[in-house]
Amino acid sequence: MLRLIHAQKRLQLGIGFGVGIVFGFLLQKGGVTKYDILIGQLLLTDFTVFKIMLSAVVTGMIGVYLLRDLGLAQLHPKPGSLGSSAIGGLIFGVGFGLLGYCPGTLVGAIGQGSLDALLGGFIGILMGVGLFSELFLGLDRSILNKGHFGEITLPQWLKVNHWLVIFPLAIGIIGLLFLIERSGL
Image (cartoon, rainbow, N blue to C red; front, side, top):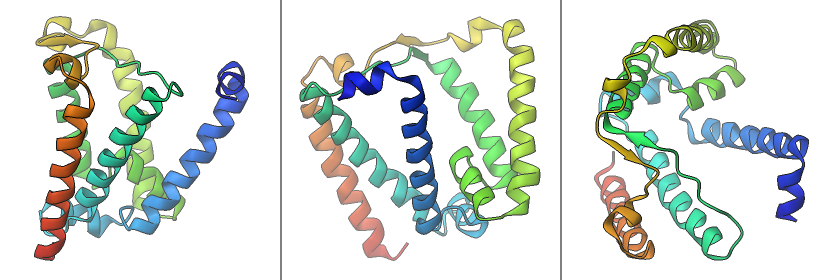
């Protein structure tokens, strides 16, 4: 069945579209498409976003590697570097701080009718993408490639079985979630 899906690009797009709608619905139901909750996260007064993201990390980490071990999925890590991560993080952080939305929550907020997300965020994303695509070829690659680490995962870097990284990380994240919830944040 997965080979059938892999061979049909329209089916892949349809599945992606459906998963995106479900993702947006769940973001909205979780409350993280609301400006006040997102700003509360940035001000460290509301940890709803943090809890949802950590829950997604645990679920995704276990799910992806389980599918990989069962032969139902393959990993294709993208090459990275500390320079590109720092620059991308700064751009993301400035946009998030200025508008109060990240790209996923922005689309969810547009879907629920938030005009600030539509007018400020969507137009801002389009402008940012256009600007980046125009400037990309002229960017100084020496900064972007600083600390290049290639297509490696954390377990590969540590040279250990992936479950020796996943299991302790999952336990640690679940413990952190429990402490956050217990503290009332």
